[in-house]
Length: 94
View 1: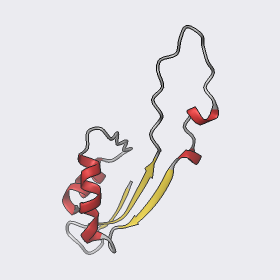
View 2: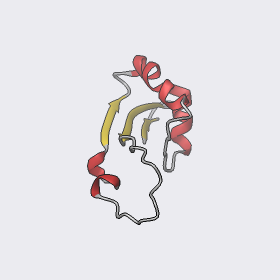
View 3: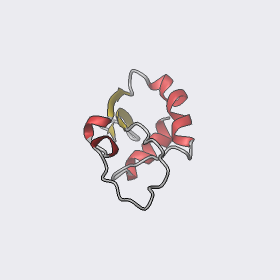
View 4: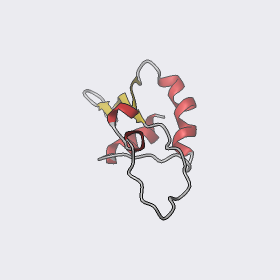
């Protein structure tokens, strides 16, 4: 999620970036003919995530260097909710 500020500014600017990262799931072979019940470590919970708040005003000069490779990598799944403006702000500011 992004938060932007446009008070007294024509275009505005991104002020805060919120990121949640879930560790990758381990790849296991398809189950055999027996059915198994998933254990708690196989399910997604908020406890498995790493959450970050990024002050984009302070880190403006270094965000592009670190985040562009992640956003450009098609092997990394990115999930955004209600991100119409967020995508435009990311492209404009970084």
